[in-house]
Amino acid sequence: MTASGPKTVLIVDDEELFLRTVADGFAPQAARVNVLTASNGRLATEILARCSVDLVVTDLKMPGMDGFELIAHMSRSCPAVPIIVMTAFGTPDVEKRVERQGVAHYLDKPLDFPALAKTVFDALDASASGHLEGITLPTFLQMIEADRKTCTLRVRCHGQVGHFYFNRGEPLDAEVGPHRGDAAALALIACEQPAIEILGGRVQRPRAITKSLSELLFEGLRVKDENERARKQARGASGAQSAAPGSPAGVNTKSTRRAEPMGANDKLKELASIDGFAGAAVYTPTGEPMATLAVDGQHLKEVGILANNVLLNAQKASIEMGTGRGQQVHVEAERAHILARCLNEGTDPLKSQPGKAHIHMVLVLKNDASIGLAKLRLSSVIEKLAEDFRV
Image (tube, rainbow, N blue to C red):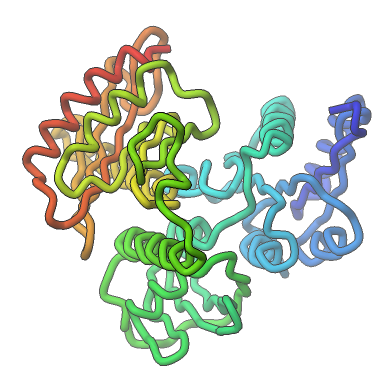
């Protein structure tokens, strides 16, 4: 990092003492990192306009322009800059929803400086390797839901302007062009690189959206895949061009964030023979993709992360109900089935333990798939994968 000079990190928080403490803490690391501070989102936008920033660390709850508005602004002005979210008002849901989904990291306040410094340097290293991206609209919508925020989003995409209405985190309505309700929400979620703007004030509208946000996100990503395939066909692209060497035609296999363990990809291929197979992936309990196998899809990563969150919430709920830890969830969407299964050889329901495999596996199928066979095959394959992911 020092060979190319220090990286610039912008810290945004309304607590002046915290900002001074952070600036002083990073002072001995001046050769690695240049720290800028802002006490609210508005000042942060001014800094972003005149300085090249490599990473933003922001609180969510601030007077004036808060962290949500700052992130929305960044979606328009600097969408590729990774973000670390800090909040003292967070919940386990907030952490699960934002971590590794566009937001680089999530930090619960109060936090100590060593923890912050480690997260910052890890994020800078990952960003330099191309592993971190800017915020995405699905991530932003989940943050609004988890934080129970009331707001109206103005979303600009490909010359169109749409609106998304939330009341205490619940999606009430959406509109874009001639569409309203679910259809408009799906169209907005399927947009590529939308620009987001938050409009304040109370939202007083009748509920026109019938689906949950999770259902909308799953379906919106499917629409996004279809749009991408249509664009490829228009350009004369063939599925074989995206196939990895040695993989079946039309199947795109890739490793995300880390090298796939030897043998994991071959085991995933056992699922490809299931009728209606659309993709499969293996994740850590925190949602980090470790191996993927996709058919004609560019957004398996996002679908898998969403399914991973559904599984985590189901496990937490089953534990709280005293029924034990849930092992599998089945999301039946309009045009797809998503199965998410947990394999945990340890005793901690949420953390991995040395020498024990703890993985989550997601399988995406078309509606005409054989669900019974798929569940049996998923159970068999995840057991075989355990040996590849023991830590």
